[in-house]
Amino acid sequence: MASKDSDKDTRKDKDLRKDKGGKPRAAEEKEAQAQRQLGILGPHGDMRLASVIIEGYSLELRDGDGFVGDVASGTAFRHMLEAWRKLYASMDGKDPLGSKPTRELSKKQIDALADKSAAAAQAVEQASEDYALQLADVVQRFLKQPTWRGVERVILGGGFHQSEFGGRAIERVRALLKEAKVPVELRTLRHHADEGGLIGWVHLAPPALLQSYDAILAVDIGGTNVRCGIVLTHLHRAPDMSLAEVVRREKWAHAHDEPRRDELVEGIATMLEDLVEHAQKKKIRLAPYIGVACPGLIVEDGSIAGGTQNLPGNWESTRFHLPRDLCERLPHIGEGRTQICLHNDAVVQGLSEMPFMQDVKRWAVLTVGTGLGNASYTNRAGEKSE
Image (cartoon, rainbow, N blue to C red; front, side):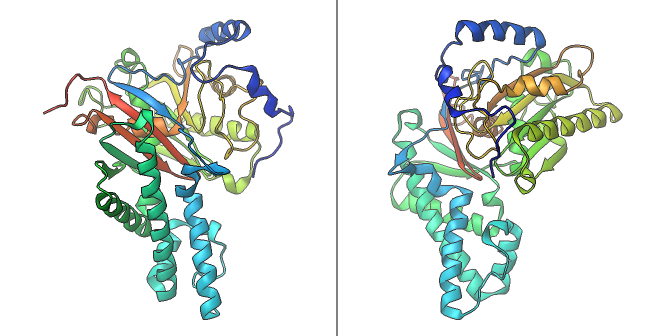
């Protein structure tokens, strides 16, 4: 539930900056220079990396009054399950999923209820079928967009596929795409959903910086949870960083606490401080770099130009700058200034798969969470790997 912040930010603020990818105005350029001196300018939202081009992200296709992706989000699945739950309750005179509201049921609880009751299993199965139909349609509609044309493989991220009902729904999506003769391969994220959005940062951090350290700190801000972790690069064992792993992770289900925007930022800073202390105790050499992933359109100056409706408060105000606000709350890592870089959460989660996408030219990611994130990529190698 979004709450008002003390500075009373307004939606008009976002109109004062240019669209994603535009150059900062004169005043913003002056601020950007100051941010460089503080070590908090990325560049943020970089679209051209050494090995891959990010063709686009946060693609918003309108469908009537809403967006196409809204019908295939984790929230959408729960609406579908709620509808089938009410239907079975009206037929049987008993709620097949018990007394707990659908929105409060965890994925594990839904799986457990489906195992215990035939009616619950049928309700979940019907909701999964509805969801699969919607997701298959979304994939096909995205594939028709310019930034998705030629995509050969789609990675499904988020935690949805890690449940039994989610896994069955994904299998059904594969079958539907095959029946429709859609020439695309559907895979699920190989990393745990809580870690993909952290591991992807090893492909965004400056390569020269990584050479001198063991690990980086990473943050993944979602509409329901925040995850912070220490990511070991294992760069010297695997130059493509295919062995990168999260060795310490903290998770905060902030949606239950309903914090204000600034309280959420303060909580993230506290989690990062704890991770810095852990790294010091374990003698892990942390790079003075923190990657922060969040929903929305990331401007090169570190501001956010839209897509943050699932976060509390106004994250698009010109008076709010997430990298700067975090930097002010954090101690230095080592002797130098800590650099904080911001990028879109779906982009980062997709990049965690990059070492395993070298046999295709064009690929994309869909992240099923509170919303449906998306990003598409083109490998920069001239030819496919053998």
